[in-house]
Image (tube, rainbow, N blue to C red):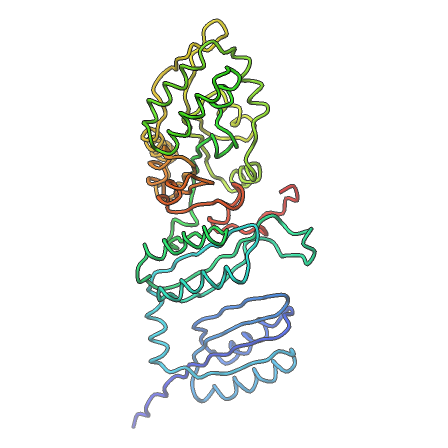
Length: 412
């Protein structure tokens, strides 16, 4: 006569206490001794405080001995252990949740406060999402405020499907404005951690100025050119028309002025660190600018950009003619160039990033897998999927999930 097969037991153990070497090895060694099957395992460490969970499956004839041995071992290790039986129904329900979407919410700013975290996580809860993990991407925070880094970032991994993703994005945008923090919401798919190409606008993105304004000042037409520039960047007039009008005002300017301007360009905070790390991890980088090739090439030589596409000023007898050579690099052309470079580099469009601040950057921001409005005009920030307004360009690294601890170069 056949005996009825014993029903398996599912047990969850939670371990907490002071972290020390060998805890995980000792506890899983006991499970191995009894041929227990580990269904899930996770561990976190905050200020040398251990929090670990193990979900395992075993048979009733072994479960008592397993728990007894685990209890004795926990006593030896001076950690707390708690046992919770899990029903098959509850486990099946938990497994079914694993198929749901996962999103990454990134909080970025000069500092992250409890109030900011509370507001952001409240939105997450209201949208019916569950927080799985929380990671700090920036370095550990010293008690002395004078020694703290000028940026802070944490990343939330959340699971589920938002009730209204557009509303969720809108709420994050409002919090960004009112609380002085950048909040990114990204689907945690296969492309998020496999980006390979970054395309940048130049003026007011890589550098903290509009080069054409600098040239105009030297030509004595600064006020006229600035007024046209501001109107174009707000999207009030056609970029090609505004570009032609501004370049015409530079007629007669000596080309030697460009070298002096290039040498004294105000470089945007975080650019050197960003480029150092992007090259270190194998990214291709491009400048796609409505500015001028002279200055794009200067930045390429200084920071190692792989591509530069910008506008070429016509020169005769050492003077600017007030005309340009070739086609204008406008918003439409930037988007085309991003797609072209992606094809040349054999990079899926979903693996691309575009970064810019003006209305003429919106086409490439919308085409790229990740479009980031950087210290952008209100219209651009409202339209772009992601934005950075609180810190420098190296904030892009955190949107990619890269931690400071990955890089040990003290210079950065």
